[in-house]
Image (tube, rainbow, N blue to C red):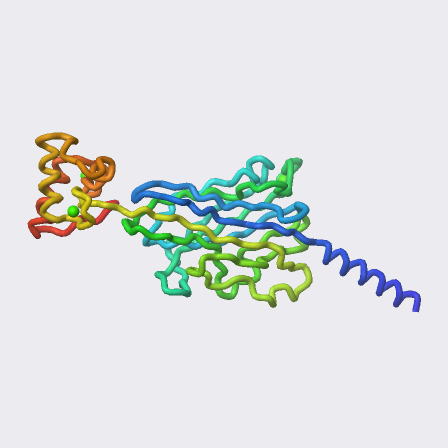
Length: 294
Ligand SMILES: [Ca+2]
Ligand SMILES: [Ca+2]
Ligand SMILES: [Ca+2]
């Protein structure tokens, strides 16, 4: 009888221990308010405590983006990792894999981020484990490759069959996995979140609120040199031709936009004779606007 009571007490203590293993965090992908065609942008993935900060031992994140709008360049580890001397970080873009997008959009591509605070490397250990204020986990660099004026989402992604491990954080000992609780996107790529069943095995807690982000693309006015919102019309060729005679005074609508519109061959250089020649050929119907980034 006595041993039964003791067992019950131990069980109660264990369950209290499990319940107390909590990590209320908000994890967010930055929303970039404005990015021009061709521009390189850095998108922060940040973490912020929503209660008492808990020590973390590592994380695994999956981020999706539209490869028709953004070109993945690279990722740097965030300030939490550099400030606290975390010992392992890797960013793994999978160039071969397209993941399905659920709602009315093209397939997305994925990047996986993994970090482990303390590796078994002798006497070296991180200096801190808990993000006490909003701080970055990773900084992703993309290049804008779309000329559309549109919002392109960058969201957390849960792969089919991996819902209980994608986008998770571990406690310091590795005994508790903190999973997504609320998932907040703009409703475009929001394919899934962690399954409620993921909490059934002891040691998994739905505690993290995930917020997707993205980039507002400003689009491109390529070929619309007279800025009448019709690219490659006869007036565009005439105004651009006048530039070579009269200089910048040929641009009377919006000088900055009109200069940017002259990179007709999309080689990154504006106001060139090569651009004028290509523009004249397009207006004459001899060729199509050349693709960009080649
Ligand atoms: Ca270590
Ligand atoms: Ca025009
Ligand atoms: Ca050019």
